[in-house]
Length: 478
Image 1 (cartoon, rainbow, N blue to C red):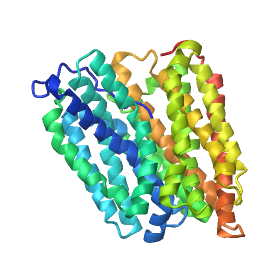
Image 2: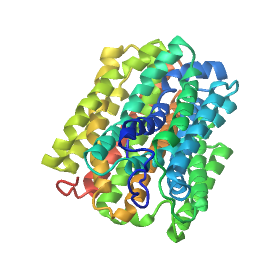
Image 3: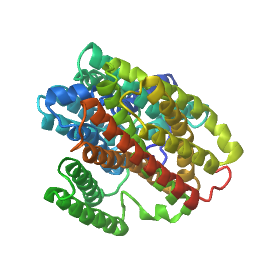
Image 4: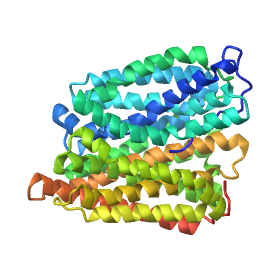
Protein backbone atom coordinates (compact mmCIF):
# COMPACT_ATOMS: atom_id res chain seq x y z
CA UNK A 1 0.00 0.00 0.00
CA UNK A 2 1.06 3.53 -0.47
CA UNK A 3 1.85 6.31 1.90
CA UNK A 4 -0.99 8.67 2.72
CA UNK A 5 -0.99 12.36 2.24
CA UNK A 6 1.51 14.35 4.27
CA UNK A 7 0.69 17.71 5.81
CA UNK A 8 1.18 20.76 3.69
CA UNK A 9 3.93 22.02 5.96
CA UNK A 10 6.22 20.26 8.35
CA UNK A 11 5.35 20.81 11.95
CA UNK A 12 7.79 21.49 14.66
CA UNK A 13 8.86 19.43 17.59
CA UNK A 14 6.43 17.56 19.76
CA UNK A 15 4.77 19.41 22.55
CA UNK A 16 5.92 18.94 26.06
CA UNK A 17 3.02 16.72 26.80
CA UNK A 18 4.42 14.02 24.59
CA UNK A 19 8.09 14.28 25.57
CA UNK A 20 10.72 11.68 24.72
CA UNK A 21 9.27 9.15 27.11
CA UNK A 22 5.97 9.29 25.29
CA UNK A 23 7.30 8.53 21.82
CA UNK A 24 6.86 4.75 22.17
CA UNK A 25 3.19 4.98 23.24
CA UNK A 26 2.57 7.68 20.60
CA UNK A 27 3.88 5.40 17.84
CA UNK A 28 1.80 2.50 19.14
CA UNK A 29 -1.40 4.55 19.22
CA UNK A 30 -0.90 6.13 15.80
CA UNK A 31 0.10 2.88 14.12
CA UNK A 32 -2.85 1.06 15.70
CA UNK A 33 -5.20 3.62 14.16
CA UNK A 34 -3.69 3.04 10.72
CA UNK A 35 -3.64 -0.73 11.22
CA UNK A 36 -7.43 -0.65 11.70
CA UNK A 37 -7.78 0.70 8.17
CA UNK A 38 -5.52 -1.96 6.65
CA UNK A 39 -7.18 -4.81 8.53
CA UNK A 40 -10.66 -3.69 7.54
CA UNK A 41 -9.82 -3.77 3.84
CA UNK A 42 -9.74 -7.61 4.00
CA UNK A 43 -11.14 -8.75 7.36
CA UNK A 44 -14.62 -9.38 5.94
CA UNK A 45 -13.36 -11.27 2.86
CA UNK A 46 -13.42 -14.73 4.41
CA UNK A 47 -16.71 -13.88 6.14
CA UNK A 48 -18.47 -13.08 2.84
CA UNK A 49 -20.17 -16.49 2.41
CA UNK A 50 -21.64 -16.27 5.94
CA UNK A 51 -22.70 -12.66 5.35
CA UNK A 52 -24.35 -13.70 2.08
CA UNK A 53 -26.34 -16.41 3.84
CA UNK A 54 -27.40 -14.32 6.84
CA UNK A 55 -28.34 -11.13 4.99
CA UNK A 56 -29.50 -12.72 1.70
CA UNK A 57 -27.07 -11.03 -0.70
CA UNK A 58 -26.92 -12.10 -4.34
CA UNK A 59 -23.47 -13.35 -5.45
CA UNK A 60 -22.85 -10.16 -7.43
CA UNK A 61 -24.45 -7.83 -4.88
CA UNK A 62 -22.15 -9.30 -2.24
CA UNK A 63 -19.21 -7.39 -3.74
CA UNK A 64 -20.78 -4.17 -2.43
CA UNK A 65 -19.77 -5.23 1.08
CA UNK A 66 -16.23 -4.47 -0.12
CA UNK A 67 -17.10 -1.72 -2.62
CA UNK A 68 -19.12 0.40 -0.17
CA UNK A 69 -16.05 0.67 2.07
CA UNK A 70 -13.40 1.21 -0.59
CA UNK A 71 -15.47 3.66 -2.64
CA UNK A 72 -16.08 5.99 0.30
CA UNK A 73 -12.48 5.58 1.46
CA UNK A 74 -10.85 6.17 -1.91
CA UNK A 75 -13.27 8.87 -3.02
CA UNK A 76 -12.89 10.98 0.12
CA UNK A 77 -9.23 10.32 0.94
CA UNK A 78 -7.86 13.52 -0.58
CA UNK A 79 -10.62 15.57 1.03
CA UNK A 80 -9.84 13.87 4.34
CA UNK A 81 -6.26 15.06 4.07
CA UNK A 82 -7.47 18.60 3.46
CA UNK A 83 -9.73 18.41 6.52
CA UNK A 84 -6.69 17.49 8.63
CA UNK A 85 -4.71 20.46 7.31
CA UNK A 86 -7.46 22.88 8.27
CA UNK A 87 -8.95 21.35 11.43
CA UNK A 88 -5.80 19.76 12.90
CA UNK A 89 -4.56 16.22 12.33
CA UNK A 90 -5.09 14.85 15.84
CA UNK A 91 -8.63 16.17 15.99
CA UNK A 92 -9.36 14.79 12.53
CA UNK A 93 -7.84 11.42 13.40
CA UNK A 94 -9.82 11.19 16.63
CA UNK A 95 -13.03 12.04 14.79
CA UNK A 96 -12.27 9.47 12.12
CA UNK A 97 -11.51 6.74 14.66
CA UNK A 98 -14.76 7.41 16.57
CA UNK A 99 -16.77 7.38 13.32
CA UNK A 100 -15.01 4.17 12.30
CA UNK A 101 -15.85 2.52 15.63
CA UNK A 102 -19.48 3.68 15.60
CA UNK A 103 -20.06 2.48 12.03
CA UNK A 104 -18.39 -0.85 12.89
CA UNK A 105 -20.90 -1.24 15.70
CA UNK A 106 -23.77 -0.50 13.30
CA UNK A 107 -22.42 -3.01 10.79
CA UNK A 108 -21.96 -5.70 13.41
CA UNK A 109 -25.61 -5.31 14.46
CA UNK A 110 -26.98 -5.24 10.89
CA UNK A 111 -30.02 -7.39 10.15
CA UNK A 112 -30.55 -6.25 6.54
CA UNK A 113 -28.21 -6.00 3.58
CA UNK A 114 -28.84 -2.27 3.07
CA UNK A 115 -28.08 -1.63 6.74
CA UNK A 116 -24.70 -3.35 6.43
CA UNK A 117 -23.82 -1.50 3.22
CA UNK A 118 -24.63 1.87 4.81
CA UNK A 119 -22.42 1.00 7.79
CA UNK A 120 -19.57 -0.05 5.49
CA UNK A 121 -19.85 3.26 3.63
CA UNK A 122 -19.58 5.15 6.93
CA UNK A 123 -16.53 3.05 7.80
CA UNK A 124 -14.97 4.25 4.56
CA UNK A 125 -15.65 7.88 5.53
CA UNK A 126 -13.93 7.28 8.87
CA UNK A 127 -10.97 5.61 7.15
CA UNK A 128 -10.64 8.60 4.80
CA UNK A 129 -10.17 10.81 7.87
CA UNK A 130 -7.79 8.36 9.56
CA UNK A 131 -5.27 7.49 6.85
CA UNK A 132 -3.97 10.96 5.85
CA UNK A 133 -3.64 12.11 9.47
CA UNK A 134 -1.52 9.26 10.81
CA UNK A 135 1.62 10.08 8.81
CA UNK A 136 1.38 13.76 9.70
CA UNK A 137 1.19 12.90 13.41
CA UNK A 138 4.33 10.77 13.12
CA UNK A 139 6.11 13.74 11.52
CA UNK A 140 4.88 16.01 14.33
CA UNK A 141 5.51 13.71 17.28
CA UNK A 142 8.92 12.27 16.35
CA UNK A 143 12.06 14.41 16.09
CA UNK A 144 14.04 14.21 12.87
CA UNK A 145 16.69 11.49 12.94
CA UNK A 146 16.85 7.76 13.73
CA UNK A 147 13.68 7.73 15.85
CA UNK A 148 11.59 9.25 13.10
CA UNK A 149 13.13 6.89 10.55
CA UNK A 150 12.26 3.94 12.79
CA UNK A 151 8.71 5.21 13.24
CA UNK A 152 8.26 5.68 9.49
CA UNK A 153 9.60 2.18 8.84
CA UNK A 154 7.10 0.65 11.27
CA UNK A 155 4.30 2.78 9.83
CA UNK A 156 5.07 1.93 6.20
CA UNK A 157 4.74 -1.81 6.85
CA UNK A 158 1.36 -1.54 8.54
CA UNK A 159 -0.90 -1.49 5.48
CA UNK A 160 0.51 -4.72 4.05
CA UNK A 161 0.53 -6.34 7.49
CA UNK A 162 -3.02 -5.17 8.11
CA UNK A 163 -4.37 -6.60 4.86
CA UNK A 164 -2.73 -9.97 5.53
CA UNK A 165 -3.70 -10.07 9.20
CA UNK A 166 -7.25 -9.18 8.19
CA UNK A 167 -7.63 -12.39 6.20
CA UNK A 168 -6.47 -14.56 9.10
CA UNK A 169 -8.28 -12.56 11.77
CA UNK A 170 -11.50 -12.60 9.78
CA UNK A 171 -11.28 -16.37 9.48
CA UNK A 172 -10.65 -16.81 13.20
CA UNK A 173 -13.49 -14.54 14.29
CA UNK A 174 -15.96 -15.99 11.78
CA UNK A 175 -15.11 -19.59 12.73
CA UNK A 176 -14.95 -19.13 16.50
CA UNK A 177 -17.73 -16.58 16.97
CA UNK A 178 -19.58 -14.89 14.08
CA UNK A 179 -18.86 -12.76 11.03
CA UNK A 180 -20.26 -9.87 13.06
CA UNK A 181 -17.15 -9.85 15.23
CA UNK A 182 -15.03 -9.04 12.18
CA UNK A 183 -16.67 -5.60 12.52
CA UNK A 184 -17.41 -5.42 16.25
CA UNK A 185 -13.74 -5.92 17.18
CA UNK A 186 -13.09 -2.37 15.91
CA UNK A 187 -15.31 -0.88 18.63
CA UNK A 188 -13.11 -1.43 21.73
CA UNK A 189 -9.91 -0.81 19.74
CA UNK A 190 -11.28 2.42 18.28
CA UNK A 191 -12.46 3.72 21.66
CA UNK A 192 -9.07 2.94 23.24
CA UNK A 193 -7.23 4.74 20.42
CA UNK A 194 -9.54 7.78 20.63
CA UNK A 195 -8.98 8.06 24.39
CA UNK A 196 -5.21 7.64 24.08
CA UNK A 197 -4.60 10.12 21.26
CA UNK A 198 -4.98 13.34 23.32
CA UNK A 199 -2.65 11.94 25.96
CA UNK A 200 0.19 10.68 23.78
CA UNK A 201 0.01 12.54 20.44
CA UNK A 202 0.66 16.24 19.96
CA UNK A 203 -1.66 18.25 17.70
CA UNK A 204 -0.41 19.63 14.38
CA UNK A 205 -0.71 23.31 13.44
CA UNK A 206 -3.81 24.28 11.48
CA UNK A 207 -3.56 25.90 8.06
CA UNK A 208 -5.94 28.36 6.45
CA UNK A 209 -7.64 27.11 3.32
CA UNK A 210 -10.83 25.94 1.72
CA UNK A 211 -12.36 22.54 1.05
CA UNK A 212 -12.73 21.35 -2.52
CA UNK A 213 -16.17 19.98 -1.72
CA UNK A 214 -17.35 20.15 -5.35
CA UNK A 215 -14.40 18.05 -6.50
CA UNK A 216 -14.89 15.48 -3.74
CA UNK A 217 -18.62 15.15 -4.41
CA UNK A 218 -18.38 14.86 -8.21
CA UNK A 219 -15.42 12.47 -8.06
CA UNK A 220 -17.02 10.17 -5.50
CA UNK A 221 -20.46 10.28 -7.16
CA UNK A 222 -18.93 9.58 -10.57
CA UNK A 223 -16.98 6.52 -9.46
CA UNK A 224 -19.97 5.25 -7.46
CA UNK A 225 -22.20 5.56 -10.55
CA UNK A 226 -19.64 3.68 -12.62
CA UNK A 227 -19.40 0.81 -10.12
CA UNK A 228 -23.19 0.68 -9.77
CA UNK A 229 -23.57 0.45 -13.55
CA UNK A 230 -21.15 -2.48 -13.76
CA UNK A 231 -22.94 -4.29 -10.94
CA UNK A 232 -26.30 -3.78 -12.70
CA UNK A 233 -24.81 -5.23 -15.88
CA UNK A 234 -23.64 -8.30 -13.96
CA UNK A 235 -27.21 -8.89 -12.74
CA UNK A 236 -29.36 -7.70 -15.64
CA UNK A 237 -27.17 -7.52 -18.74
CA UNK A 238 -25.93 -4.66 -20.91
CA UNK A 239 -29.40 -3.67 -22.09
CA UNK A 240 -30.54 -2.75 -18.56
CA UNK A 241 -31.84 0.85 -18.48
CA UNK A 242 -30.48 1.58 -15.00
CA UNK A 243 -27.03 0.37 -16.04
CA UNK A 244 -27.05 2.65 -19.07
CA UNK A 245 -28.22 5.54 -16.91
CA UNK A 246 -25.39 4.80 -14.48
CA UNK A 247 -22.78 4.84 -17.24
CA UNK A 248 -24.16 8.14 -18.54
CA UNK A 249 -24.18 9.72 -15.09
CA UNK A 250 -20.63 8.50 -14.45
CA UNK A 251 -19.36 10.04 -17.69
CA UNK A 252 -21.00 13.40 -16.90
CA UNK A 253 -19.88 13.48 -13.26
CA UNK A 254 -16.28 12.48 -13.99
CA UNK A 255 -16.05 15.04 -16.79
CA UNK A 256 -17.35 17.63 -14.34
CA UNK A 257 -14.77 16.48 -11.80
CA UNK A 258 -11.94 16.99 -14.30
CA UNK A 259 -13.25 20.45 -15.16
CA UNK A 260 -13.57 21.43 -11.49
CA UNK A 261 -10.06 20.21 -10.67
CA UNK A 262 -8.58 22.14 -13.61
CA UNK A 263 -10.05 25.40 -12.29
CA UNK A 264 -10.03 24.97 -8.49
CA UNK A 265 -7.62 27.15 -6.52
CA UNK A 266 -6.93 24.31 -4.07
CA UNK A 267 -7.94 21.10 -5.91
CA UNK A 268 -8.02 17.75 -4.15
CA UNK A 269 -6.36 16.24 -7.27
CA UNK A 270 -3.87 18.68 -8.86
CA UNK A 271 -3.81 17.75 -12.55
CA UNK A 272 -0.27 19.13 -12.92
CA UNK A 273 1.00 16.01 -11.14
CA UNK A 274 0.36 14.09 -14.37
CA UNK A 275 2.69 16.35 -16.38
CA UNK A 276 5.75 14.23 -15.51
CA UNK A 277 5.86 11.21 -17.83
CA UNK A 278 7.25 8.73 -15.31
CA UNK A 279 4.78 9.85 -12.65
CA UNK A 280 1.85 9.57 -15.05
CA UNK A 281 2.92 6.04 -15.96
CA UNK A 282 3.27 5.20 -12.28
CA UNK A 283 -0.21 6.51 -11.55
CA UNK A 284 -1.60 4.38 -14.39
CA UNK A 285 0.12 1.34 -12.93
CA UNK A 286 -1.10 1.97 -9.40
CA UNK A 287 -4.66 2.26 -10.76
CA UNK A 288 -4.55 -0.83 -12.98
CA UNK A 289 -2.67 -3.32 -10.78
CA UNK A 290 -5.17 -3.28 -7.88
CA UNK A 291 -7.96 -3.42 -10.48
CA UNK A 292 -6.68 -6.83 -11.52
CA UNK A 293 -5.67 -8.06 -8.06
CA UNK A 294 -8.52 -7.03 -5.74
CA UNK A 295 -10.96 -9.34 -7.49
CA UNK A 296 -8.51 -12.23 -7.18
CA UNK A 297 -8.79 -12.15 -3.39
CA UNK A 298 -12.59 -11.94 -3.62
CA UNK A 299 -12.99 -14.94 -5.94
CA UNK A 300 -10.24 -16.99 -4.26
CA UNK A 301 -12.14 -16.59 -0.99
CA UNK A 302 -15.39 -17.79 -2.59
CA UNK A 303 -13.61 -20.71 -4.34
CA UNK A 304 -11.86 -21.88 -1.18
CA UNK A 305 -15.09 -21.94 0.84
CA UNK A 306 -17.75 -22.82 -1.73
CA UNK A 307 -15.77 -25.31 -3.86
CA UNK A 308 -12.99 -26.58 -1.59
CA UNK A 309 -15.40 -26.36 1.36
CA UNK A 310 -12.86 -24.73 3.67
CA UNK A 311 -13.98 -23.23 6.95
CA UNK A 312 -13.47 -19.45 7.23
CA UNK A 313 -10.44 -20.07 9.48
CA UNK A 314 -8.83 -22.49 7.05
CA UNK A 315 -9.58 -20.14 4.16
CA UNK A 316 -7.80 -17.32 5.99
CA UNK A 317 -4.72 -19.44 6.63
CA UNK A 318 -4.74 -20.56 2.99
CA UNK A 319 -3.50 -17.06 2.09
CA UNK A 320 -0.43 -17.32 4.36
CA UNK A 321 1.96 -18.53 1.60
CA UNK A 322 1.14 -15.37 -0.35
CA UNK A 323 1.73 -13.24 2.75
CA UNK A 324 5.07 -14.86 3.54
CA UNK A 325 6.21 -14.55 -0.08
CA UNK A 326 5.25 -10.88 -0.10
CA UNK A 327 7.08 -10.04 3.14
CA UNK A 328 10.19 -11.96 2.09
CA UNK A 329 10.27 -10.17 -1.25
CA UNK A 330 9.70 -6.71 0.19
CA UNK A 331 12.83 -7.06 2.34
CA UNK A 332 14.93 -7.54 -0.81
CA UNK A 333 13.37 -4.78 -2.92
CA UNK A 334 15.34 -1.77 -1.57
CA UNK A 335 18.63 -3.43 -2.53
CA UNK A 336 17.24 -4.37 -5.95
CA UNK A 337 16.13 -0.78 -6.55
CA UNK A 338 19.58 0.53 -5.72
CA UNK A 339 21.27 -2.01 -7.98
CA UNK A 340 18.89 -2.20 -10.95
CA UNK A 341 16.62 0.84 -10.75
CA UNK A 342 12.85 0.87 -10.42
CA UNK A 343 11.71 -0.11 -13.92
CA UNK A 344 13.28 -3.61 -14.23
CA UNK A 345 12.05 -4.58 -10.76
CA UNK A 346 8.58 -3.21 -11.50
CA UNK A 347 8.23 -5.01 -14.84
CA UNK A 348 9.36 -8.30 -13.29
CA UNK A 349 6.76 -8.00 -10.55
CA UNK A 350 3.99 -7.14 -13.02
CA UNK A 351 4.94 -10.08 -15.24
CA UNK A 352 4.56 -12.43 -12.26
CA UNK A 353 1.11 -10.98 -11.52
CA UNK A 354 0.09 -11.57 -15.14
CA UNK A 355 1.34 -15.16 -14.84
CA UNK A 356 -0.61 -15.70 -11.61
CA UNK A 357 -3.84 -14.54 -13.26
CA UNK A 358 -3.22 -16.69 -16.33
CA UNK A 359 -2.61 -19.72 -14.09
CA UNK A 360 -5.89 -19.12 -12.24
CA UNK A 361 -7.66 -18.74 -15.61
CA UNK A 362 -7.27 -22.52 -15.96
CA UNK A 363 -8.85 -23.26 -12.56
CA UNK A 364 -11.20 -26.27 -12.51
CA UNK A 365 -13.60 -27.58 -9.83
CA UNK A 366 -11.46 -30.68 -9.29
CA UNK A 367 -8.29 -28.69 -8.56
CA UNK A 368 -7.26 -28.91 -4.94
CA UNK A 369 -5.26 -26.35 -2.98
CA UNK A 370 -1.83 -27.66 -3.97
CA UNK A 371 -2.61 -28.05 -7.67
CA UNK A 372 -4.85 -25.04 -8.18
CA UNK A 373 -4.07 -22.31 -5.65
CA UNK A 374 -0.64 -22.61 -4.02
CA UNK A 375 1.40 -21.72 -7.10
CA UNK A 376 -0.67 -18.66 -8.06
CA UNK A 377 -0.69 -17.44 -4.45
CA UNK A 378 3.12 -17.58 -4.34
CA UNK A 379 3.34 -15.69 -7.64
CA UNK A 380 0.89 -13.09 -6.33
CA UNK A 381 2.98 -12.59 -3.17
CA UNK A 382 6.27 -12.14 -5.03
CA UNK A 383 4.63 -10.04 -7.74
CA UNK A 384 3.02 -7.66 -5.27
CA UNK A 385 6.27 -7.39 -3.33
CA UNK A 386 8.21 -6.47 -6.46
CA UNK A 387 5.62 -4.11 -7.95
CA UNK A 388 4.30 -1.60 -5.46
CA UNK A 389 7.48 -0.22 -3.92
CA UNK A 390 8.97 0.63 -7.36
CA UNK A 391 5.65 2.22 -8.36
CA UNK A 392 5.70 4.35 -5.20
CA UNK A 393 9.33 5.31 -5.81
CA UNK A 394 8.59 6.27 -9.42
CA UNK A 395 5.59 8.41 -8.47
CA UNK A 396 7.22 10.21 -5.54
CA UNK A 397 10.63 10.77 -7.16
CA UNK A 398 11.40 14.43 -7.95
CA UNK A 399 8.18 15.69 -6.38
CA UNK A 400 8.48 19.25 -5.10
CA UNK A 401 8.16 19.41 -1.28
CA UNK A 402 5.03 21.57 -1.50
CA UNK A 403 3.33 18.87 -3.60
CA UNK A 404 4.55 15.78 -1.75
CA UNK A 405 1.32 15.46 0.20
CA UNK A 406 -0.88 15.79 -2.87
CA UNK A 407 1.24 13.31 -4.85
CA UNK A 408 1.20 10.64 -2.15
CA UNK A 409 -2.47 11.20 -1.39
CA UNK A 410 -3.39 10.84 -5.06
CA UNK A 411 -1.31 7.65 -5.20
CA UNK A 412 -3.33 6.04 -2.42
CA UNK A 413 -6.61 7.33 -3.82
CA UNK A 414 -5.99 5.79 -7.25
CA UNK A 415 -4.92 2.55 -5.61
CA UNK A 416 -8.17 2.19 -3.68
CA UNK A 417 -10.35 3.33 -6.56
CA UNK A 418 -8.56 0.97 -8.93
CA UNK A 419 -9.29 -1.95 -6.64
CA UNK A 420 -12.94 -0.97 -6.32
CA UNK A 421 -13.55 -0.40 -10.03
CA UNK A 422 -11.60 -3.53 -10.93
CA UNK A 423 -13.67 -5.64 -8.56
CA UNK A 424 -16.88 -4.26 -10.07
CA UNK A 425 -15.65 -5.12 -13.58
CA UNK A 426 -14.63 -8.66 -12.58
CA UNK A 427 -17.93 -9.21 -10.76
CA UNK A 428 -19.65 -8.16 -13.98
CA UNK A 429 -17.57 -10.71 -15.89
CA UNK A 430 -18.47 -13.34 -13.29
CA UNK A 431 -22.18 -12.52 -13.44
CA UNK A 432 -22.24 -12.57 -17.24
CA UNK A 433 -20.44 -15.94 -17.33
CA UNK A 434 -22.71 -17.60 -14.75
CA UNK A 435 -26.11 -16.08 -15.51
CA UNK A 436 -27.15 -18.84 -17.90
CA UNK A 437 -24.53 -21.46 -17.00
CA UNK A 438 -25.48 -25.07 -16.26
CA UNK A 439 -23.90 -27.67 -14.00
CA UNK A 440 -23.36 -28.04 -10.29
CA UNK A 441 -23.00 -24.90 -8.12
CA UNK A 442 -19.27 -25.63 -7.75
CA UNK A 443 -18.83 -25.92 -11.52
CA UNK A 444 -20.75 -22.71 -12.18
CA UNK A 445 -18.83 -20.74 -9.56
CA UNK A 446 -15.47 -22.07 -10.77
CA UNK A 447 -16.25 -21.26 -14.41
CA UNK A 448 -17.25 -17.68 -13.53
CA UNK A 449 -14.26 -17.18 -11.22
CA UNK A 450 -11.83 -18.53 -13.83
CA UNK A 451 -13.23 -16.09 -16.40
CA UNK A 452 -12.79 -13.24 -13.91
CA UNK A 453 -9.20 -14.32 -13.18
CA UNK A 454 -8.49 -14.24 -16.91
CA UNK A 455 -9.78 -10.68 -17.29
CA UNK A 456 -7.81 -9.70 -14.18
CA UNK A 457 -4.70 -11.08 -15.87
CA UNK A 458 -5.41 -8.96 -18.95
CA UNK A 459 -5.77 -5.85 -16.74
CA UNK A 460 -2.39 -6.64 -15.16
CA UNK A 461 -0.97 -7.09 -18.66
CA UNK A 462 -2.27 -3.62 -19.56
CA UNK A 463 -0.46 -2.23 -16.50
CA UNK A 464 2.72 -4.02 -17.63
CA UNK A 465 2.52 -2.60 -21.16
CA UNK A 466 1.78 0.95 -19.98
CA UNK A 467 4.70 0.84 -17.55
CA UNK A 468 7.06 -0.58 -20.17
CA UNK A 469 6.14 2.06 -22.76
CA UNK A 470 5.53 5.20 -20.69
CA UNK A 471 7.98 4.97 -17.78
CA UNK A 472 11.50 5.91 -18.86
CA UNK A 473 13.02 4.21 -15.84
CA UNK A 474 15.76 6.48 -14.62
CA UNK A 475 18.25 4.49 -12.61
CA UNK A 476 17.99 4.72 -8.83
CA UNK A 477 14.71 6.61 -8.69
CA UNK A 478 14.61 6.27 -4.91
